[in-house]
Length: 184
Image (cartoon, rainbow, N blue to C red; front, side, top):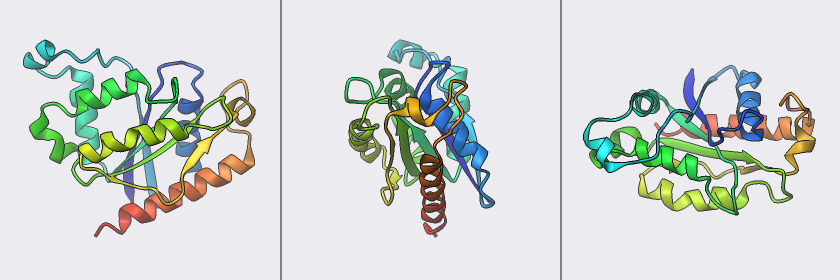
């Protein structure tokens, strides 16, 4: 069974992206286990803090990523780009730079995202590409998933109620699973 770490890039309790990650976990594919993780508690990056050692939240998430078969980034889109809190978390996870190959090097990574807007998270996902390339990841591009008008896809409790989105999410995860398994 493949094990991936799913990370929601939002801190908001009612986040559409955290709901999308939860829906992915609930699909329970037979060959794929998704462990949801949070960036809550990761402090703003500060080189002075880094010299004293990685914050425990960062060190724990780094080890989970390093032990996983892949990573699923569930990214919101803020002002047509990457959410600052999510980028901050990835910046911490890439410290020290000598650890990047162990944590991110050739690690299969996929992105999905949900937005209340009509274009989903296409701009945010595109903005992540130079970051993922710099970290040396192996990004999955075969079937992008951008959930638009998310307030119609989820109910007030955050449950995914749009069957079309659910079907696309299932197809996406099946494709990502095959992508990971094919790395040989």
